[in-house]
Length: 302
Length: 310
Image (cartoon, rainbow over all chains, first blue to last red):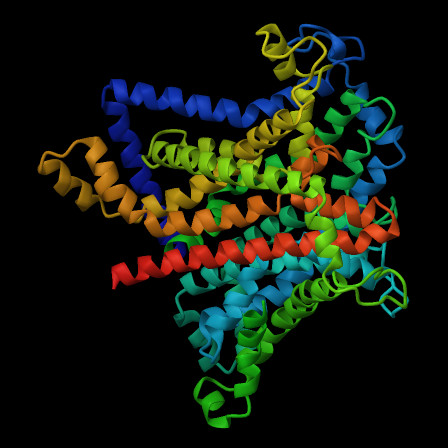
C-alpha cells in the first residue's frame, strides 16, 4: 500500500512537471537537447532498422548498389526460409527458450533465499559472501570453459557435454550474482512491518518470505527473472564450447551458422536476428523502469 | 582467487563458535546462503583454479597427461599470433572504455533532466544493451560487409575504402568495427550507471554555486566530476574487466585472422589439434591474470578515494 501511495505521489509530481514544461517557452538549450536526444535514439536504433529492412528485401534488392534505405520488395520469405529451410535455426531457438527458462527458475529459487538472508538477516561473513557472489560476474569465463569441457566430456561421472545440463549449470554463474544483487535491493526497500506482523501471527521466516515478501515484491522478482532470462539468452561462449549440435546448442550459436555456409545468406541472417531480438525489445519497452532501477541499485547505495 | 575462497570459507569456520552464531540469528542465514555460495564455488571458482592445473599439463584430454611445467605458457607467449591478440585486446580495451565513459557521461547528462518522452528515450538506449553481443555483431556485419553493408558502401563512395575492400578486411578495420559495435552496445549501460550517480548529487550544491556566479563548465568540473568519482571508478572497473575478456565481437569480425586474447584461447582449445588444447587453456589463464592485475590497480585507486572521504 505504501508502494502504491508512493507511485501515486510520484505520478502527480510528474504531471506537475509536465504542466510546468508545457508553459515554458522553448529555449535554445532545449532545442539543442532534443536534437542530441534524437541523435542518440537514432544511433541506438539504426542497426535494428538496417537489420529489419535487410530481412525484408528479396534476393535481388539485397545486393543492390547503392543499397536501398527503404525496402522496395517487401519480401518476407527470408523469415519462412530461416525458420523452415535451415536445419538448425528452429531447434536452437527452442533450446535457448528451454535453457533460459530452467536456468531462470533455478536462479530465482536460490537467489530469493540468498537475497533474503543478505537483505534481512544478520550473520557473520555477510560482506565476504556478497563479495564472492558479485566478483564471479567479472571472471573471464574463457578460463572456465577449458576445465568444464574436460569435466563434461571426460571419462568421469559428469558426461553431460551437448546436453541442456551442460549449459544450465554454467549459465547459473551468469545469472545468480545478478539475481541476488537485484533481489537484495528490492527486499531491502520493503518496510519490515508486514513481515514482522506475519511472524507475530506464527509464520516461520520461510513462510513469511514466500507468503509475504515475495508476493509484495512480485514486480521486482519478475524484473529479476527477465534480467536473468536475458543474461542466459545472450550467452554465446558456453553454448559454443559445451555443446556440439542442435541437441542442445543455443540460438546465439545457431545464428552464427548462417555465416559458415558457403555463401552467407544475409537475408535469412537478418530475419533470424530480428526473431532473436524482438522478444528482448518488447521486454525492454515494457520493463525499462524496473530494469533501470535494478541495474543501478548497487551503483548508488554502494 | 585464493583470497576469495578463503573469505568464502570463513563463515563455515565460525559456525563452531556457537555463541557468535546464536547472537547473529542462528544457523538459518547460512542455510539460505549456502546453495548459492556452493554453486558458485563448484561451478565457477573450482574450474578457474583447475584451469591453472590443466595449463601445466601436456594433453589434458588424455587420461595419462603429464606435467610439463610452464612450457605451454612459453609456447603461447612466444607465438606472434598471441602477441598480436594481446596488442589487439589492449588497444580495444583502452579505446572502448575511454569512448564509452565519455559518451556514457554525455548521454547521462543529457537524460539527467526530466523532459517529456524521457522514458521512451531510456527504453531506446536500453535496446542495444539487451541484445546478445554475438547477434549485435551479426547485425553490424550486415552494415560492414560488401554486399548489404551501408557502411562499406558509404566508405567506398567517400574513397576511404578501395572498391572491393570491406570494412573488416584489415586488422585495424576489425578493431574499429569491434570498437564501434561495443561502444554502441555498452554506452547505454555506462550512461545508466553514471545517471544513477548524477541523481544523488544534491541540487543545492548547484544552486549555491550558481548564486556564487560560477559558469556551467566550472560547476561540471568542481561539483559533478568530484561527486561522480566513485560511481565512475566502479563503472570503469566493470567495463575494463569486461573489455579485457572480449570474445564474441572478435570471434565474428576477426575470426582466426584477428583474434582477441579470449578468442585466441577458444580457437586453440576447440578448433586446433588436441596438442593445442593445453596452450589454449594457458592463454585463458593469462587473460585471468590480467583481470586480477586490473582489479588490484582499481581497488588501490578506490582505497585512495575512501581515504580522501575519511
